View 1 (cartoon, rainbow, N blue to C red):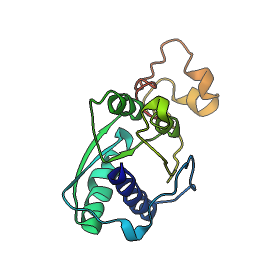
View 2 (view 1 turned 135 degrees about the horizontal axis):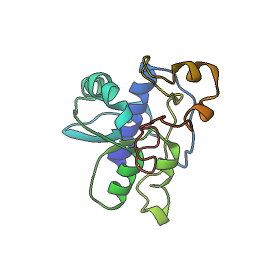
View 3 (view 1 turned 90 degrees about the vertical axis):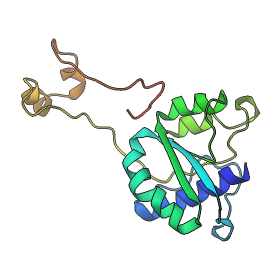
Length: 167
């Protein structure tokens, strides 16, 4: 558990340096100080798939450089990862989700006590992307999106929100 807390703190600190911060949330125990963030060997990190580019190209290499540990990351849907952690299908030193609700699924004795605290390090809006050649472009620009997505012939894709809350 100590490796989880140390790794999460190091990742959160590195992420804070990469972008904005929205403050801490959901903390139940104090995170470690920066003085305790050193590691050796391999640090396995499970993270939200929406963070893949940032984790693999920015945070992972920066974490390895800052701590001396070997970074090994795996991305998937946040809620899916919670289920796999609780089911002992996946193990990691650090879990970084895209949803604080996912983190809550690992906290407390009823959830296996996998997580003692978490910190919110950023937020992002959800967007609807569309093909500029779609027959719905004019409607998407002039009507509420909630109305447009119910129009006949409109097709919208997304991931399973039960597995990937921001997919």
